[in-house]
Length: 151
Image (cartoon, rainbow, N blue to C red):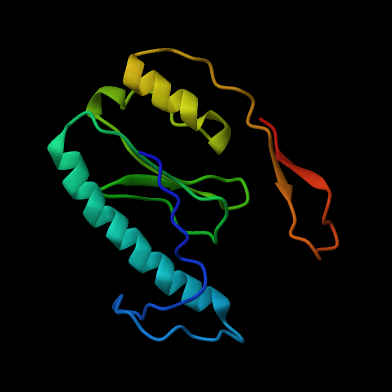
C-alpha cells in the first residue's frame, strides 16, 4: 500500500495527549506544535504497524517523509527507524528478519532497491546518493535546485 499522510502539518489540532483540539493559529513556536502532532502521528503509525506486522511475518513497512526536523536515531521492538542525513528527511522501516543482512540505504534514492532486494531476494546495487532540494515560491532560491549530497 502507498499512503500519503498530511499530518503533522498545519492545522495543529492535537494536544500533548493526542486529543483533538481546536486548531491553533500559530504565530510563534511552530516547531513545538509540529513536534506534538508528529509524536501523535508516529504513535498512531506504531499502533497500526503492530497490527499489520502481526498478521504476516513477511510484511514490510516503509515510512518516508519529504522533510522534517531532526529526531534522534532510535530502535525499539515495534519499529526500527533512522533519520537520513540529508536535510533531516524522515525514514522509518520495519522489515522481515530474512532481510536483516541487507544494507539499509543512506537516502531515499535507494529505498525502492532496498524493498526489491528484500521482497525478491535480489542483489540490486545501490545508486549514488545524489539528492536535490528545491525551495518554495517566494524563497530567495526559488527556481534553483541545490545538490545536497553525493556519496
